[in-house]
Image (tube, rainbow, N blue to C red; front, side, top):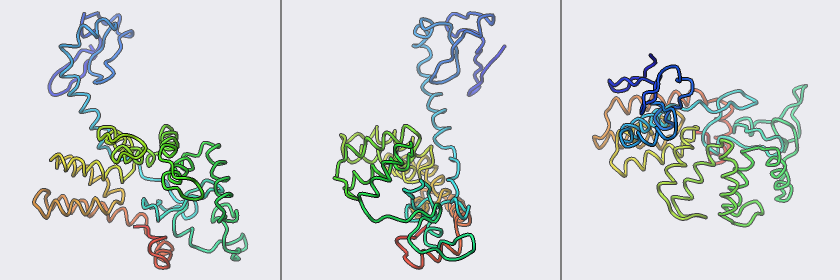
Length: 310
């Protein structure tokens, strides 16, 4: 007999939860898509069993959702030049429209050398050596080319430009959302976060906190620290301090200093323990150890805002 156990209860998943159709038909049984705890032999049996199963199903579905939501997401990618973990701060990385690479602030700032170790004329991409462009028209042409190649970061950046009315594009929140949805459908985490912000603030769409939270969760589960921070703030507003703390911990491990500050604030007001803050600080310091380099420090010292990476 195959069984699943949750909170001390055993469920025989080799038979239909409604009519009890036996193991000989178990290969035809289909699991409840929400809770995965029980199986049914037909749609009719699932409907008939709904009133008995609904409460337990919702509880288990919420547990499964939280397991996914509070799982530490995989680390970000490495810089393709120095092979160190890319900083999560936008100013700590730069997207190259010529080759589609995301390069850290240190490698963006550093001189570009040829194969003989000679400095190449400044103003070229650190990765592909393509000359940089300062023309809105040429930048837009490159961006459209990257979008045509299915580059989600280019879609996201184009959405940002429409949202802000930057780089020669008119301000158009609806158009921005179109690009963000397109990128989000392909898994781009920051696009999910920006869609959530749009629903939070009524920019291009109606204000809808429930939808905003939904998109923040999708972004957070894919590693977006801003979305994770926003979820923590929302949980604090409703008094769910334990859940807020979980979000802040995950974000602190991913380099979000604002989440670390929130944990410190919770500790100051007696809503979190000293151990909580100590753990968060240790996680944040581990992140700094993974991203710090003398080259990135040199870039940040040159222009703290443009090249700041933590």
